[in-house]
Length: 57
Image (cartoon, rainbow, N blue to C red; front, side):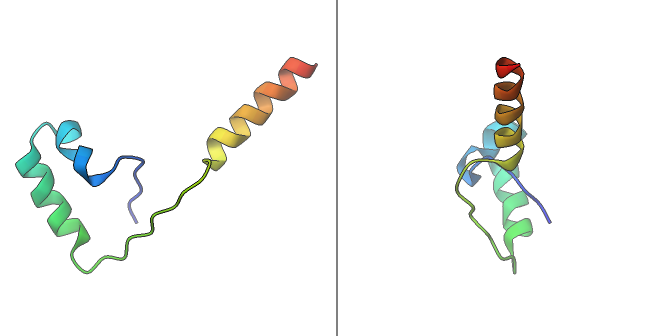
């Protein structure tokens, strides 16, 4: 399982080479199932709630 908050089009910038990123994605995505989840991150939501609790104290 691989997760990322970065869209496929931006992987070239992260890897530093768009050709290499395209080759990597080609191999990773072959026969893969992609789940595109939308919404607030659970980690970020919990962090925000903790910060709000600290402000209220």
